[in-house]
Length: 327
Image (cartoon, rainbow, N blue to C red; front, side, top):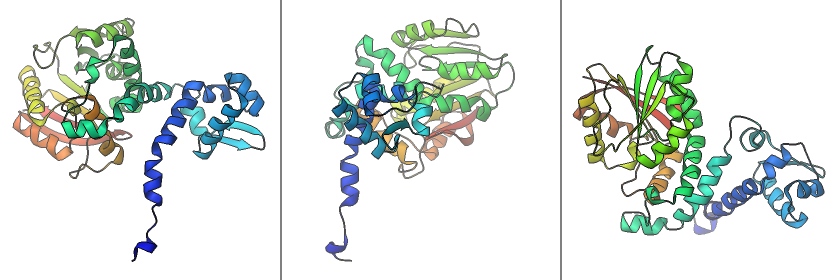
C-alpha cells in the first residue's frame, strides 16, 4: 500500500466531531426537539415554535437531519425515533440533562485535555464547581446512569429485606431504583455535605431511603447494612485509594455481605468498550486521580481486601457491575 492509497477521511471524521457535538448541544438548548415533539413542522413553523430566525433554525435543523436525529420529508421536519424517545421531553427516558451537563460542564473542561494529561491533574476538580451548577451536574449524571439504575435491581437480584449502604450515592437514584423494585429494601445514601443536602431534598418522599452525611475517606461508615453499593465511584481514585476504600468497607461488613460496584469497567487493554476508554479522558479533566479500570484489576483489589469476586455483569451502555461477597 502506498501513501496515495491512504485517505485522511478517518482523521477528518474524528477532528470534526466537536462540530457535531456542539450542533447537538445547541439544538438541545434551543428546544428543537421539544418543538418537534408537538408534531412535524416546516421551517416557518419550526422557527415560530423555537423563536429562532428562519436562517439559523434551518442551519440547526439541517445539521440534525445530517446527523440522523431529525428527519425531513418534503418541507416538513420531524424528530427521528431516537430523538422523540430521548430528547423531546415526552418520555421518562430523558437525555436532555446529560447534554446540558456535557455542554456546560464537560465541554469547557475538555478544551484543556492536553493540559490535564500533561500536568497529571485537571485545572479544576469538579467538586470545586459553583453551587448553582451542582444541580446541572447531578441531573446530568442521573440521566447518564438512568438505564444502568433501572437494570441494577434485576441484575443484582438482592435478597428480600436487604439493607443497602449506597456509598457516594449522589442524589440517591441508584437507591431509588433498588427500593422501587423491592418494597422490603431499605437504603442509606452516604454522601459529602453539599451533595447530601441536594439528595435530602430529592428523597424527602422516599421514607425507606435515608441520607447520612460523611466523607468516605475520613469518616466511619454507618453500621447495620448487609449490601454495599459503590456506583460511579471507583473511577475517582487511584488503585491504592480504591484498595483502602475496599478494606474500609470490608471492616464494616459482616461475612457474607454483598458488594456491588457499578462503573465503566474495561477489558484488560483499557480500550473496550469504546465509551469507557473515552470516559478516561472525562475523568482526567474533572478529578485529580480519575481513570478507568479493568475487571481484572478490580477483582485483584477485591482479593487483596477480603472480598471474593463473584461476577461481572452488564447493566446498560458502557456501565457494568462487578459483584463480590465478604469473606
